[in-house]
Image (cartoon, rainbow, N blue to C red):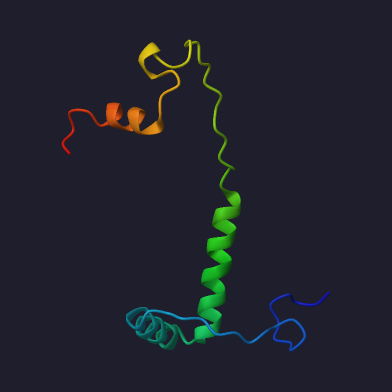
Length: 93
């Protein structure tokens, strides 16, 4: 079985990413201090973020029953601006 992280021109692609200058400088110093390449540091970070996000449960909007009778009488057949104005009434201009 081959190592999925092994360097191999068939499984790796060269790409360009933009990184904020301060973060790039900090990353280069960190990589140098840890005796790893910037590439290894970026790959490790991406793997950790992806693994962490894959563990999170998917968001599910719970059902909330509604037992109202629809719009209040004053808004039936009204324009959206009427609803907006009522929603912001008393909150300034």
